[in-house]
Amino acid sequence: MNFETICVVGLGYIGLPTATMFASRRKKVIGVDVNQHAVDTINRGEIHIVEPELDIAVHAAVKEGYLRATTRPEPADAFLVAVPTPFKKGADAGNIPTPDLSYIQAAADSIAPVLKKGDLVILESTSPVGATEQMAAWLAEARSDLSFPQHSGEESDIRVAHCPERVLPGHVMHELIENDRIIGGMTGKCAQIARDLYKIFVRGECLLTTARTAEMAKLTENAFRDTNIAFANELSIICDKVGIDVWELIRLANRHPRVNILQPGPGVGGHCIAVDPWFIVSETPEEARLIKTAREVNDGKPNWVVSKIKQAVADFLQANPDRTAKDVTIACYGIAFKPDIDDLRESPDLEIASVVLDDNPGKTLVVEPNINELPKKLELAELVSINEAEKEADIHVMLVDHKSFKGNKAPGGIIVDTKGVW
Ligand code: SAJ
Image (tube, rainbow, N blue to C red; front, side):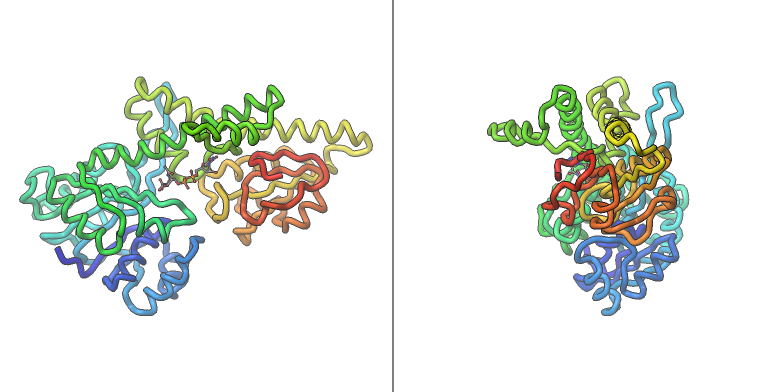
């Protein structure tokens, strides 16, 4: 099938790079976002997020006239939905978070009026199993004049597929092209047509399956990583208790040819790994025992780090009886959810820094080279350079192993190093 115009709904960390890829292959792309600021920024050829190489690509796509942003979907041959799928706090007895599909519903409602026979609609957002069928149901409800795969199978007017994104923030532009892609069609034809679309820029293999398997595959990948990180985080707590350097331990154990332990840290952040496993747990709470425990281990890690910081303050005051809690300065190094990005969503580091700020009657400093302004939660803290923090703070808390932090000598004072940098 020939795709001349592609409409991408949601211009965030996935939607904008994807829209730009199509535009770079000389397809006319309409980018849609409810955020007017994002729309205006993109139409100036600039970007509202940090992702290496994205700025140059967006600039070129907009200047050459292939990418245009707007707040309402316009007619196109293919629609890609890349909106957030957060979770809602659990309301049931087990308190298990449940997926919030309201952004997908809003996207479906906005696309429906401009759909025409022959169009392809792809859900890219990470979703619980069944979300693609749900999206197709919302579209069908709004457009009874068109037929959809859930009722008309291969004969449907509209094709629907789920093609989960799998790119790593910080490497998006490269991984979008090179990674293999899972293409889950609501029917075989839906999958084949969706593959034609991705082949416009994807060099990796496009693997065809059903929409439900594609949904589960994406959740499985992130639950696998979450479980492995939980193992490393649990290990770090055990090692701290028995006085062993966890970083050395992991280095040594990983010399076994079949062992590959991940790195412990202050917790698991981001909008993917800290969220997606819940989509499995909420659907099958009795069965997903390991996946749920891994989530709890990782979610519990920031509290453990906070208890280490409290201990460090107590140690400092004991060693400096002339000082009171009011004149203890604590510096947090890094609040992004992982190294070398500006993304603060679901960041355990931000959570830890804000508890430090609330609990610390003295000064709280934050070093975060990837942002220019502290988020609201931290507005009473001071955003400073690494040099200032190293000079001024009594307690240094390493939270993110940003490139610019690595290789620096440990500063004087008490150190809480959650990433093994110092
Ligand atoms: N982390 C650790 N230790 C590690 C690795 C990561 O504590 O050894 C922490 C990070 O600091 C961060 C969190 O885990 O807080 C998640 O970081 P990440 O780099 O593992 O993953 P994300 O969330 O940036 O991207 C993941 C990727 N999924 C997998 O690697 C299976 C990516 O490919 C997905 O596209 C993305 O989720 C997504 O959008 O779902």
